[in-house]
Structure formats: structure tokens, C-alpha cells
Length: 328
Image (cartoon, rainbow, N blue to C red; front, side, top):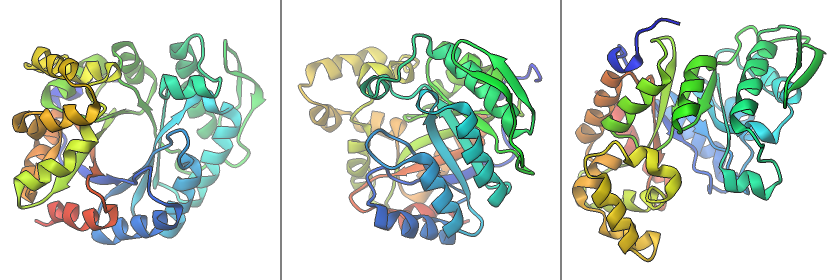
């Protein structure tokens, strides 16, 4: 890796993707993906949240149902799968759809992993061991390792993919971001994305321009800015919780933000009371030129792919509006 920080290395261009909402009924998953592909989005990212749809199953189905769009998995919790069998699944998909798969892995949400009895004593050690082994297996290497969590004895993928999928670390804490820069091909940064949080994160990652960064962004495109803000507010309801502190701490209004959250009895009250100026920074809300300005700021900051999280009650209808950003 080079010593140049991505925060000082603007990308020539930025890919624009869209997230497949976790609550979308199974019957709507492929229509959503096909529509995103047809509208010209560069990528569709699927999520694996406990109790919703599985990440690997979604990725395989979406790739089979679309023609050109890249598909990212963001993220697979490393404690949920044996790395040897995870590598088999991912190698099979990558072999069928060469050059179209991106794989995000991470710790997972602690509460969810505890619910299924899978939260490790040392999440950092597990992530390190799993990512190193996964990359080696997907590259066709024979892997023998006797780690704290990952134990493999001469394991290899018999038919590794011609194009190994890049492995992204979906993490947010300072130590985890530094680890991502050390062991992964890229990093997935969850919402909300602000210039301050992006700059802080990339400094912690400390990798070169070959390290790709994907961002998630709650987004609503509407010529009526006030209506767009109201659409994105529900997507910001969790950002006042402790797990999101790393996103908020770099902001100049961090203390006021925490004070407001403390005053609110519910997350719904909190999102209603968020000042418009904060909403405009914490989400993408407004006409296409506003969204493009956000994308340009992220591109200049070193982001490779910005992923829209569709806001509003109808994700399929939201796709049409979000696609207006792609029109030049």
C-alpha cells in the first residue's frame, strides 16, 4: 500500500449505487433490482440484518436477474459463518458472474450477534483472521491456519473464481477502521456521511488510493426540498443512539446534537426536531443538483461508490426519482 491517504486523493469519478431495502417483500426484491439495473445505477447493495433477508441469497438472485449492475453485500457478519464454507458460496457466485460481486464483511451489530449466541470475545481478532483467510481462499490459495477463531487445515477452493471479488470491511470504530485499511480491499461506511466523518474515517483507515470506499446515504430526490427532508427524517432515527457516536463526534454541533437526543423521549420525536440544516448535512434531500453536490463532495474526499438508501414509503417509486441524479 502507498502512504497516500484517500482523504487527499480525489477519485476521477464516483459510482452511484442503490441499497435494496431490508424490509422489501421477497416478491419485490428482483423487480427492484431489475429496475435499478435498467435505470442505470452502477451497483445494487444488499444488506443482511437479523430477521430479514440473507445476504448471499439476495446477491446470487440479484446477479442472476440483472445484466450489468455490480452487486455488493453489505455486510456479512463474520461470526455467522465458517470462513471455508463462506468462501465456497462466494467463489461460486463470483465464478458465475465474474467482475460483478463486491463482498462486505464486518463485526455485525453486537445486539443481533448476541441474540444468536455468536458475539466473539475478541471481535477484532475474528475479523482479522476471517478477512485474511477469506481473501486467500478466494485467490485460490491452499490455506492452513490455527488461529484463535479460524482453523483451516489445507483448505482450498477447487475452482476459484477467475476474478476474485474484493473484500470490504463494513466497520465504524477507530480500531476497526485502521484494521480495514490494513487487511481489506476497501471499507463500507454506514450512514450518515458528512465531510467531517468521511475525513476522520479515511485518516483512520490510512490506506492508499487502491483502497476503495463505499458510503451509505439516506436519500430522497424531490424538487420540493421540504418534502424531501420529511422523507429522509425516518431514515435518521437511529443516529442519535450510542453506536452512531463516531459519526457525530466530528461535527461542530455534536454537543447540541447529543443534547437534543437527550431531551427527546423517542427516536420519532428526535427526528421530528432535527433542524433542517442538520438534515441537509446528514442525508441527501432535495432536487438532483443538491444530490450531485453531495456526490461531488464525496468523490473529492476519496469515495469510490456512493450508495443511496431510498427514503419514503415506496422504494420502487423512489428509484425513479433517485435516478434523476444520473441524468447529465
